Image 1 (spheres, helix red, strand yellow):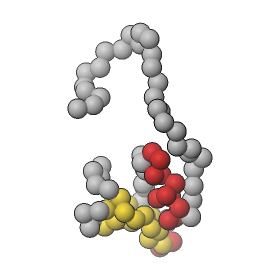
Image 2 (cartoon, one colour; image 1 turned 30 degrees about the vertical axis):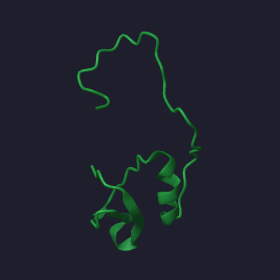
Image 3 (cartoon, helix red, strand yellow; image 1 turned 180 degrees about the horizontal axis):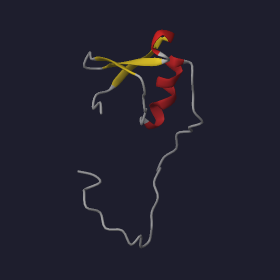
Length: 79
């Protein structure tokens, strides 16, 4: 997990089979074979740097409410 703001995403080249490098706001550069962007409305801005996009449209209030889900959580969802 990277808990820093991602500044740049770039392809490392074909020599690594499509691997990517991530540069964070803290100045770290991390090369990875797989990348999961869980960045919400900023996802396409980062994917654009790789020449890709996903069909995400930012909207307010992304959430689901269940009346009585019958689920007990063992860990906090938010702090």
